[in-house]
Each structure stands twice: as structure tokens, then as C-alpha cells.
Length: 332
Image (cartoon, rainbow, N blue to C red; front, side):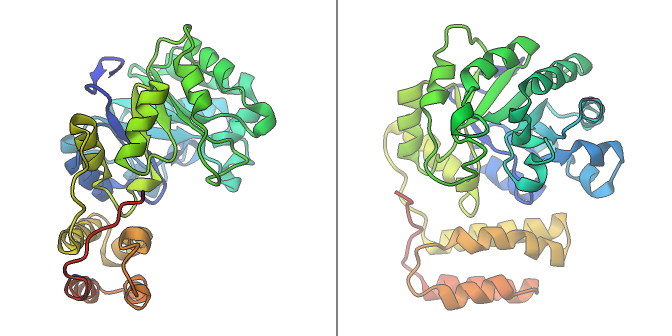
């Protein structure tokens, strides 16, 4: 599959852009497990235009993680065009436009999935961004604002007509947020629309290798984007690739291997941010990474309350010793 001239190989796996998740340290880890295209955390167009240091830092890219896309969001056309130009200067392989974030503070301002309530503005914004920069522009969106406005088949055609290089569709409406099961039937309808010729990337509930293969076989999408299932389980990319290539599941990780990966992630996070912020950043991963271990709650609370790198590493050693012989669980 190609996005513009970027060759991602056959059935690539993409790491979804996620706020407070896909920073440089996590992208490094996912890349090591086989993610084919990385995305930064999504960045605010207003913050980029105002040159906010924290936002600018989100666009730091290492050559070893390429290809990388920067995702931007905003509710006004002119700042979004300017933000795309600024993001282009960080030298990503592509710019992605966020028309899918359902979070209230973003969507109710008209940005992210909020743009699904103003399709003409969405199309015009996309057109102007495509015209403003010289690298591929892609879009990530949802099926619609709610069940009564699932217009994605028509919207996909109109977005394609603006000149975007690929389209990612999350199989939920904005009203669903992240609840219920992702509906891939409309993603398949977009992919199988004879008018569509750009790559269509499916997103939503890719929680296991078997689910990945089922969705690829049933709906024929060109690629899969994996978001929340990678949190606490960055090796999911390796598991899926192995299953797609062999039709066999990899054996689950031992807890010792699991702990080793978490330690590496922790050290990378602290190195990238600092001790306090690096530990805080990892808590979202720690909250789910050892899910399924029996009687784990007391240790989990300690892990989530720790504010000291040495103490946290010692607690992880305790996990390895206490649960030696256990294996990481398969969500299915």
C-alpha cells in the first residue's frame, strides 16, 4: 500500500495518534514491534500558531521511527492551514487531519469529530490544507456525528475529491465515543465503493490477531490502524503480523518478558520527559498492562501510586518474582 509515494508494504499496521500516549518513547517501542507508520500525538492548530513549546515538542521526530505523520486538529480553516505549514517544517512524511476525536472539549468547539456537523467546512478545510503543503495529506474521521447522520460513504468521496492521499475511518459515530462495538460495515462500504481509489484504513476494536484478520478478510481494507489496544501491549503489532503471515498465534509473553518491556518503556519515558513526567505518562499503560493476573490489585495500586523511578523498578521486579511462570493474557 502506498500513501502518495510512501510505500508501506502489504497490509501495513499503523499506530493511531493518541494524546498523552504516542509520544516519542512509545513510538520507539511500537516501531520495534513492527508498526509500519507512526503518528505523533495530535496537536492543536491554535497552539502551533502560537508557538507553544509543549506542542512544538510533540512534533519531534527521530529518523529511526520513520515514516511518521503529524496529526493536527482545529475548528477554523485559516489557523489549520497555517498549522499544516508549521507541522510540515518538522519534516514528517505526511500530515493527517483529525476529524474524529470525540472528546467533548474538542468536538463541541467544532474541531475533531465536531467537524462532522459541518461537512462543507470539513471539505473546504481539507482542500485548502492539501493545496498549502507539498507532502501527502490524509484524514481520520468517524462514521458520522450520530446514528441519524452516518454519511461516511458520501463524505469519503468528497474528501477524496479534495486530493487527500488516504482515509482512515473509525467504525463508531461521535455520539458513541468509544462505547459499544465498532461497526465495520460502513468502512467496508467505503472501501468497496467503485469511485474510491485512495487507500482506506480501518480503525476500531482491533484487539487481537484473529480480529485483525477477520476484518481484513471481510471488509478488504488496505491497512489497519491500532489505537487503544496497543496501550499496555505494544507487541500487538508483532502478534498481528505473525498471525497474518502464518495463520498461527505467537505464544503469549511470559511475565518476565512482559516486565522487561515495561521497564524499557519506563526508562525511555523518563529519558524523554523527566522522572516525574515520565512516570506519570506511563501510568495509563501500567493501569492495563498486567490485566488478568490473579490478586494483582494491591501491586497495581502501588505501581500507580509510585512517584520514584527506583521504587517503580523494584515494584516491577516484585511483579516478575510473584508471578513467575504466568503469561500475558489474550483479550480473546
